[in-house]
Length: 260
Image (cartoon, rainbow, N blue to C red):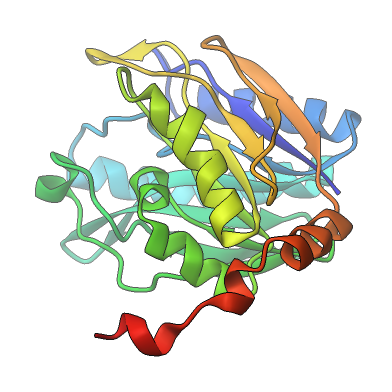
């Protein structure tokens, strides 16, 4: 299966949900033309990161965005992972959904590990593993800071996740997360990771770019620089099978010791 990571240029002050959706439609079309079945976009794609605005405006964006993304997926034939601000009563979650061309929204995940200032504005999710099927592959969802916790990725692997899709908003100077931690997480937990970041700057933050797809051997199949680009890579279940037979971390674990 081919997958795509869209390293999107961070939105400007003139961007609105309609313009973001138009950009998404174009990139989903391009991904489909290159044979990709899944497109992963950055963290809080619907609004840009960091989030600002009134609660009622954010709630309206969330309501309208989901249906429009489902239309794009159906029209292009490409499944899409996108980030958005999800309201639940008075609570606000940093969320990501996986939408398929024929089934609509198949998985919705709320970020469980909140980074610094996020803790003041978002409520953490309480469900660590959310999955859906795309092209015969079990796809799990995590968001940005989540992937920096080995426990999160290991839980996914033990639950059967084969590809972990990670919308992110990684900023400089933490480039080592993309360059070192992401391939290490893929290797130590024996799965593929698709890590999709923003490019450029937004509201005083400078994003690192460096989106990538890492495989269960710890190899980077494709990687971005720091400009907007669409990255496409092929992932094969046979690679996963061989990697798990060669590197037996999952088999050789001794969980009876870890509870101590």
